[in-house]
Every structure is written in C-alpha cells, then in structure tokens.
Length: 516
Image 1 (cartoon, rainbow, N blue to C red):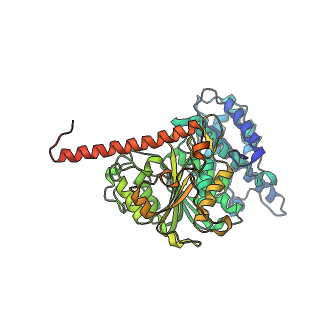
Image 2 (cartoon, one colour):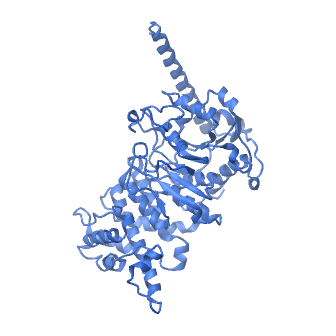
Image 3 (tube, rainbow, N blue to C red):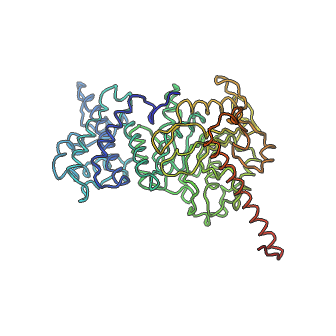
C-alpha cells in the first residue's frame, strides 16, 4: 500500500526536510519550545513581506500606480509593510550584531500598521541569549523560501513550511509540549468525515489552527467556494493563540478566533454561536479545568461533569454550540468511551438515549507527539434524520481502526491517505452517500449497532465490543498483536471489576457492614 508523507505532497517532502535540518542545526542549546517562536516568527515575517512585495511590483508597473499608497494593499487584503519591516531590510542587516533589534522593530512596525496582528508577533529577537550570528544565518536560510512566483503560490510553499515546522517542533517538544499541534492525518480524517462544504466551522480549543487550514483545503480540493464557510475559534494558551493567528494569516484565512486568548469554559468568546460543524482536539483528561465553579452551567444539559476530568465538559460544550442540524467530530482519550467515574457514565447514557452519538472510531496508538494515551474519535449530531442521504436514528456506527496506519518514524504512527479514505467512505456509506457504495458490517472493522444493543453493553462505546473479530483472525493475526489486543481487553475487564468492587464496598459500608 502506498503511503503519503505528512504534507501529502509526495516528493516535495525533501524541501521542507532539508530546510528543517538546516534550521535545527542553528538551534545550538536553545530549547525547541523557545526556538519555535524564533523560526515561525521569521517565516511569518518573510510571508508578509513577500506578499507585500508582489503587490508592490504590480502597482509600480501600472501607469498611475503608487506602490507606497497603503490603501491599495488593504483593498486587496494584503498586509501593509513599512520600509523598515520589509525583508530586503532584514537581509541587509543579517550579518550585523544589531539584527535582533532590526527584527524586533520590524515586528512592532507590522503590528502598528495592521491592527488585526496586534499582540500576535514575537518581539524578543534582540535578547542577549539569542546568538546573533546564528540568527543572521537563519534569516539567510529562510530567505531561500520564495512565494513571489506563481508556481510557488499555487503550491503554498510558505504555508507548507509553516505546517511542516509546526509538526517537527511538536515532535521535538514531545511530552513536554506539542499540545498546540494535532497530527495532520488525524485532522484530515476528521475533516474528510465531516465534509464541511458550507456553513459555520467552530473549534473552541483550536491550537495552532490545523482544523481550519484542513477545512479550507477540503473545500478547495472539492471545487467549493471558500466564502461559503465561516471560521470561529478560541484558544486558552496565549503563545498558541499567537501561532494560530500567524498560521491563519499565512493561509489568508479570515477567521474569528477572538481578540485575545481565553478559556472556553470560563470566558466563552462565542456564547451565542450555533455551528454547523465543530472540529476539535481538546486537551485529554484535564483535572484543573475549574469545574467546581461551574456546577450549574447551562451547558450541562445531560449531567454535571466531574470536577476531576474535563472530557465530558468538552463533549457537552460542543453539543451546546451545535446548530439544530449540526455535527461535531472530536478527539478524546479512550477512557471516555467506557468510564463510569463520578457522573460520566450517566452523562454518556443520556447522550446515547437522546440519540446524539453518531459514530465512534477507535484509533491506532502512537499518533500524537505530546501523549501516548490511546485515542478515539467521537461524532455527535443534533439530528440524525437531517442527513440528506439516510435516516440513521436509533443507530450508532462503530469503526475499529486500531490496526491501521504506518510508522512514520521510530516513535510515531500516521494514517495513510488510503486509511483515511476507507474510514471516511465507511462512515458516508453508512449515512447513505451513494457515490461511496453501499454500507455493510465488516467483521473486525465496522458495525452499525442499534441503541438497544448499546444498552445491553451498559452504554459502553468501545468499538471492539461491537465489531467482532475478523474472519481470518484466529489463523492470521500475529501473536504479538493478538496478545496486545487481549491484554487491552483484559485490562478493561479488570478495571470494570475493580469499579464494581468499589461500588459494592461503598454500598455495604452504607448499611454498616465493613468489608476487610
């Protein structure tokens, strides 16, 4: 099976990889989390200046054109760049010890002239601990990236570089960081399943904006109109919020992610928004989300989420913001499918009984840079009957994709384009989309289960409980994989047994009987 790279651009991977290796050599002893802002800030500055310079030359060629007329640029949605902030001035000073100060002044000038970028750009290049010789070399390196010609623009060179570097920094930061980045194959799968052709797209924990970028790519690749989708987002981490603002600006995406960073639970910037699509990767199993201050919140329609874990707060936040016919697709830790801790089991039961759960996908391990926690995808919808293809009320589709994917490097797995297509096509076939064929249950992979069957399984949503075993599994499954699967299933049963034991002890204690 052919496998595609992180960018889906085949042979073009060499360009980004070489650029990364060259930039990483200059990092010296600087931490990846810190160096990230140096590199991505310079890439953004190069983009702003190149877009301006292209427009500058176009205006200058006109008979009565004035390339220094600021309004000419704003009319074409191009950021105005004053002389001291233009890339040629940065390059002219690259070998001077004052290069850091020159870059800082350029960032300040760009923010001053473009209010939408206020407070977004990094402005600490002049600090003493940043090697100015290496900084100058980095300027020269980034100067080799060109977006001025038509071919480079069509290939989205700078956007690709920015996206590639985000992924590499997420990998470099590992468990100590990387929360700002959702692996591209995961984002692509979510978008391919949701198919956001038209309407309001919302991500209330938007990180560096990958969901928005992929949504726009989806619309473009299916000959849709970008103006038909409207982007809304929110991000609580201030540095990640700035990364997102720069990412959207590089792509030319006009999205509303708020004028500042903010916590979605305690400072909801889009209170009245009802989205047609919600695409999100909330932080997993967060315990310090301030739930004790939100016991009576209007969003908790299906039960009050526990203070010690935000997973079910996120689920209800998403559902609260869905339009009457809206659909949400989001990433959660596997524990969300079966937990009965505190009120979570009751909330999940209420969600299922209200027919809000559309599809559950169990994902392969090792997909994320920041955590090794196994994950799943949830799809919820306000109205299963609203699909233009087939009424699937009273049913949930389960997909077990744990065996899919390939090792992109020694520690991380990635879904191939073929994997993504198979999962997405299965979902759309189940929904009755004619151009992907007729849906059928496949042993070991997918099962359309009635709500009565889910009830029999105590409202646990783990796909492995429903899809069964592959027909040839007993003879063909490798021993190591079989042992891992059986061990996982046994661990799940032990956890359930321990949970029941604790409940029995508690109940017996309530009637005065002390268990040894």
